[in-house]
Image (tube, rainbow, N blue to C red):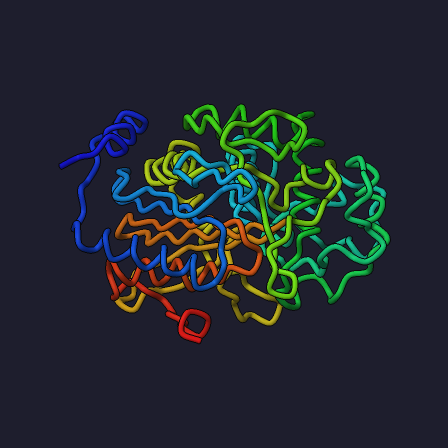
Length: 366
């Protein structure tokens, strides 16, 4: 029997729902409910999509502990670095429009940049091979910065290695991409995403973080301090608008995003996806399994996987897309200590064990 929630989901997507194996869904529901209790996680939202249909969308636990508000598929979570795939999409859309080229030197757009940046290209920023780092100590996460001010702070930070020599995760590289989007389009990157990604795909609740606006269904983020649940640490409003991963998303937003990727609704040239999902080549000719805002992997049966996680302000997120199968798992949680990647891969394991890339049970079985 299809319940009211499933009827609502059907209406929301405008497509029929694929009713998957009932026992599998029950197993996953029982598993995730048990995880909440065992690891003191306030809440989790799960989305499973296949062939542009929602197989399963459900919330577990609470989005807000103080008010005892249950999680549901409409609950709004912070994206963390899952937001990087949207930044990379914006850049690829500008490239298809002829506004940018992947191998443009960023000095072309930032002429006052230090000489050490001379060989940094847009491709280097997208693939974490520029030598830029994470936020250094001299950037105070409680201080407000304009985009120009954060750019000036980034300029002060030395590169960790010569351009293209190695791969090292860099939030600052993606902050720079957001600043670049404004310099090319004269739009804040969040406005560009709303106009060119969120609105066309019908992602009605997706947006850049804004803690002063009234946002229905917004979850609260939590951390564990000496085993006790605490509210997330405060971060300045301006730093929560940067392009390294500062979005609000729901499971339903991610369903629309997944369908848009499957159907080339945003990028018209299939070669653009091949470029975005190809491993980066380093200066020595070796490759690293990272594309443009996506980590690259292979399932046990050899199918291609693109995935990414996020962690920010008491939230965790993870998305796994098995490209040939058109199967996607999305998990959001509102506890900073959640082992979200392992949980997402366990959910995938329940559906199709042969598609799991590297199942790690260390956190679940301890």
